[in-house]
Image 1 (cartoon, helix red, strand yellow):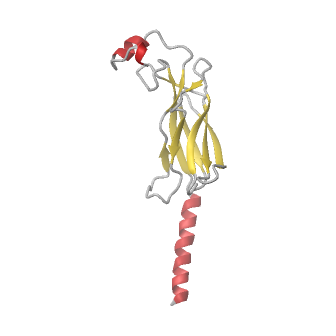
Image 2 (cartoon, rainbow, N blue to C red):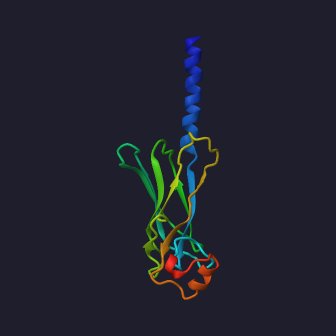
Length: 159
């Protein structure tokens, strides 16, 4: 009987390990230029092609980097990064590295990284993980931003 229990447990373990290592995660997201420098996306937001991002995972206890992989945005500012392993209990973020536009290259604090769960031990069944959009601030706001921000009832003094 004990052998049967051990055998069944090993079967479940091998199936679990095969599942976690054979299907990579696909991390998807977008990078944008905050052309109004207001801290969020607006109708004037421009999505950035050629921006560099990376997935970075760190050990929760030691804070040492355990995994990293780079990605680049396409012409619509979208990136798709394949993560080929389950990162278990690590803390993983997608992080802005470099803007694809020199006139919009200041990482927006608070919107310069996005947390992603890269484990199968959390109840999520999909292999796709969506990260929040991340943004850079333009060096100079557009002239039309005052009118755009009036839609949000904000003035230049408030942002």
